[in-house]
Length: 477
Image 1 (cartoon, rainbow, N blue to C red):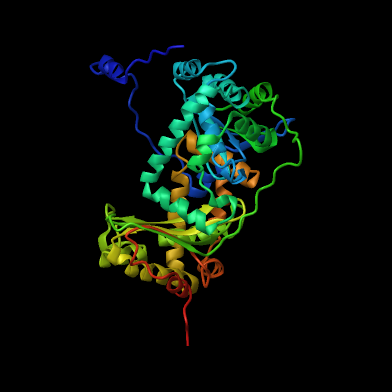
Image 2: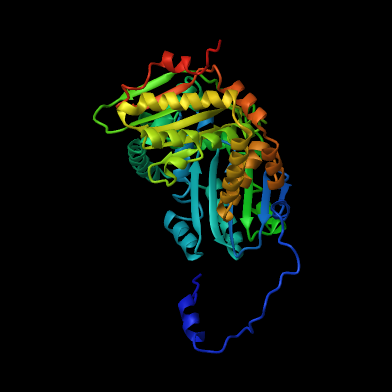
């Protein structure tokens, strides 16, 4: 189906020399503008319905002419084994390569003719397939999503072709040093456990994954109770529920044996150094074990993470940065960039920082970083906590600008919390954080804890691990 849209310029040209169609009037405020708290309460509610087969349908209807709808599946590389590591990501690639009803060409043409976008991604704990489209095209988008989930053919020719695509993707990832460092960080922080594996898997697995591996993974993990159909934008909840009942009724809810459980993971303080003196800059990450998604300590850790902040040389502010670490980085020319992070999983996480600097500056940056961490554990001030809370609120709201991020937020929270936390509740949780809470939480998670360290590049100047560990506490007399 084709659409013909008159360019905006044509409309402007048509009416540019004519009398105004709307009589101008003087606007006068009759009431005060809504407060910040009122705007949070006025956000459209998230409606949730559980189908007979256990699938959950969750929507936020904002009445926009476009919508994002997708399937969030509670499985990822964490649910793989050493033998099939990489199969979840491989399966994501194969989903768009044709079904029993549509060839790959037919699928691509149908999506393009609707003016829609179809995409997918795989993480360590979730697999996602979603579509962005006009609101009136939602029935077609849902039918396509159900088709690729339930009826993919996994032809041998397509499987062989995707091997090459994924191997090239692995080469691209290896050129992204931040991705490389974070993979190394996971491998040492969660060594010997599923979270320590990469999402893409090792090369030998990609070359050997078969159709039987893909089918087995689907039959084991793609069950209705582990799926959330999320929608945001111009989405009528009741209509989406009917579409879900129509197209996803064939999804099973029974397992051949026992239902797979979340594989346990343990954090190990350790390090990995990949020294390469031919590189101009060192790329380093250091982290302690953080909190899981549902852990109440997660909010104070997010505030502490915001206090550390992020910075690079393209940022303004100079020596007047609010972040103490950014201020030290500018004054001492300590690094090219740094970025604090709080990565969460179901039952654990990583709380730390990633930085890029010249070889001779590593020691000085580590000293300032760990001094700042110790300060958070002992004497963080109420003023900087309040400032961080305001920044955190702003960032959380800005991340929900658009139907796609809202849809992602719904799907992820339904899998992590089994509900979507309303914005006013999240705001109240952030507001409840005080300097004492931040201090106590950082003392629990950071102070005198063994960190995980990953370094790539000219990292000779990185202090010995025992010295790094000894800087995770202060000796006082």
